[in-house]
Amino acid sequence: MTIDFKQEATALYDEMVTRRRDFHRHPELGFQETRTASIVAHTLDTLGLEVQRGLAQTGVVGVLEGANPGPTVLLRFDMDALPIQEENDVPYASQNPGVMHACGHDGHTAMGLALAKIMSKYQGEMNGRFKFLFQPAEEGLGGAFAMIAAGALENPRPDVAFAMHLWNASPYGKVRVVEGPCMAASSVFTITVQGQGGHGAAPHQAVDPILAAAHIVAALQSIVSRNINPQDSVVVSIGQISACTTFNVIPDRAFLKGTVRSYNETLHRQIYRRILEMATNMATAFSCEAHMETIAIVAPVVNSVKPTAAVRSAAANVLGEENILQHRTMASEDMGYILEEIPGCYFFIGSANEELGLTSPHHHARFDFDERAMINGVAIMAEAAAHYLLK
Image (tube, rainbow, N blue to C red):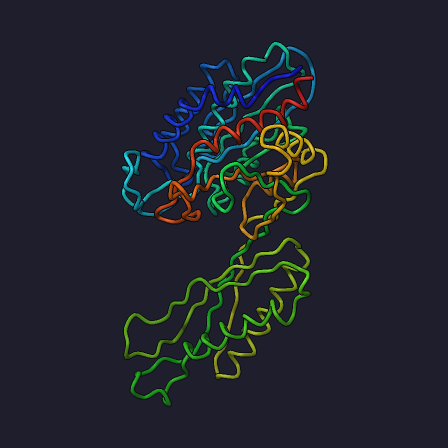
């Protein structure tokens, strides 16, 4: 059957904007999305979906059962905000001090509810079912993993999964869709450099861990340029350095915290071996010791062939083939855990608008996006998903 999903999404634009701005005014951090989850669950319930509440604390799942047997299509949306003080001067600015929707998840939640409303109109023609998954705590807190552990991928188990992200790295009217890895695996490491403290005026009587740490930071920058094949995509970044709390003390310890990003888990392990070698050897050169702890946060996001083809076809119909980009990103997303279990596609909806001044990057205090991008996202996801259930 032929449905104009762009028209369907356009008809719900005002409703999406209203919902998105309401969520934006009332942002909630990971595993604390009680207000957002309540609105989501109530809306899905009024649309006639079978609703599960409280998965992984604040997650919501709604199942829209079709009239005829068929596959299960999972549509996933994240709900959490970030611990950022908003600097936008807009009527819908955050009313929760120190918390902000600085990544577009308010838009994702509004889009998910719009999709549920659209698809519920075609329940009688559906061959299978939609499973709407509204996930908490995507921002580095393991929300997807927690939802999987809570059984969100069971009863029924999906056959295919789709997710999307509003993306200010691309302009409004564009879409990024790529087969294979599209977002990197991300992990965190902490290096503790042990020295011997003393007075800042008598450095010869101490063993300075800060000096050793500084050389470790400089040395780690050579891993990507000198130990990794230039054709492989890898990032090694130190984002946090901490030691003493005053100027005239050489501390006992210094701490380095950083991240590794790659598309290949074998390569990921190789990088960590090299980080440990460099840290321990460089610390020894300065009469210190170094110890490293690592935390795996998310798996790479890897798109499967057939679901990606369905998204590309839908994007071509909605936006035109010339507006499809195939760029990857070294950013990470815990949708990778779901795509390890279920074949699917994760894609990016261009949402920046230079003329409107909507160009701030994600996780920035002035992040905002062209709300018309929500129309494109809903239309593309609806058409790609309908490929499986509405034929």
